[in-house]
Image 1 (spheres, rainbow, N blue to C red):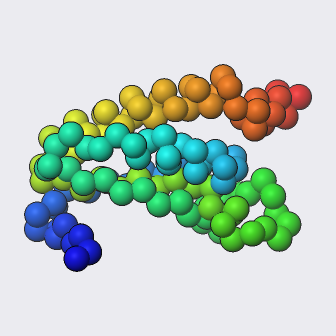
Image 2: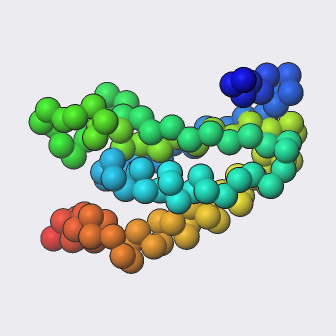
Length: 120
């Protein structure tokens, strides 16, 4: 049996965080790194999706792109039973996100290349 989605009545508090990345590979890596840690509370649900940035946001590559490669935005949706539970869960997520982004900035060649292009 497929798992059911929590109803709005059960989890009325929600927040969606959209994080743009320079490439699909980096967005996908961040998703994989962040989703391994399950939420500690059964009062909180979290889901991840990769999407393409909205049309009004500039993209680095304007040429024809594989639709999957265009998905450079990581959307994380939190749903919780109370605002407090939502805040606690998102605070933990932000700490983990800081670690993931720090590792990418220090070790990933795509991030280093993008920084060099911005500085140069």
